[in-house]
Image: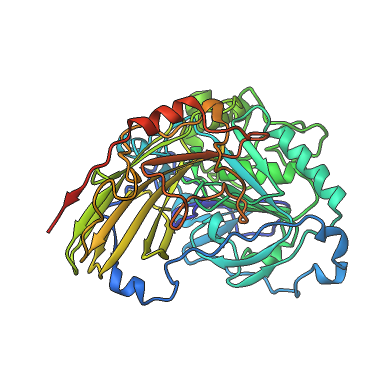
Length: 506
């Protein structure tokens, strides 16, 4: 999750810290993560076309666990670092780092996000989720958390995070244990392929040291916390020791869980075997673990365990977020507005494009791609979930706008809009019915891939975009495990229902 100025960081391990600050009984309720975007993304297309790729997303760097056996140990560790410096307005109290206003009890996270926020596509509960376990390190950038862009509030800016200091076999053992920890939830755990940037996911950096982050004292792991109920979905967390319980605990901290007591609990500091997420209300570990007033999601825990209970039910909260692990066989639906597949505009004209996207689970993400005369000029993920783009000063040429949505089952669905600027569209029927109406839904039978499916080099589903076979309308592809069927009858019926339409605009 993106860790904003109002959030909490949860550390695992022994830290020196500052004296604890007692929290007030009641504080102002606020919600730093349930953000409401306003206004469309705005682009001056003259600037975009002259930017030489500035607005085109970098490809996803894929992991390679075989490096863990081939890379010398001397090459895995980064240079020794001095203690980091926390962002302004943060304090370290015992084993917790958080904003001062939370530590002093002046603010608490509201257990009820704004209803309008829950109406934004992708925010709904339950949602599917993805965890990417990163054993290969990489160059991290400081800033609000965004796993897809290697940005983390806890990162040292432009600091090369080291490769995991262990073997491939050890990594696979940790992976299996984390998968078992999360197996009752609607969460997939990836490690061989990094997700595409479109779909929101939590990234766990496994390995390295506390000194590879900006925290000031030793810890076993660190994560952005008080993102209660995972309202922002692109966390970056860190696990410095070789313990699967630490990895799972840091991931769960980023989803809003706090520390509890109990040697059999993942959310506990106490040593123990066969740790798991608890399915009952367990005592929170506050003063014993980190200091008075430092439980970040107290009001959310009370929803499940009762007012002033000072307890947390791990699985009740996680099930509210992610549900259960049934397969997601239903792709999203996507439609570009203004409706219609072909538009004609004059040179210098402006146009606003909007997204109409729906999915049966929360967690869906989407991106916009714009090509002129077959060359990609803009390719960006809508991280803020604005769902609207304003393109000004369109220069002459043929533009293809592709709106693409992806869910956590790797269903990738597109809708396309062709804009002829300064030139008329070719007559309908001159090259066949290549321009279709996308009023229908792009689906695949049972979630199987269609004939164009496959895995792209960045680990995402193969993309049908500018320059590909233009079928018009809405396309869906899936890379479900073992999927590989021809175009199904429901999708065939969709294509037969398409009709060409054209609209002229001044």
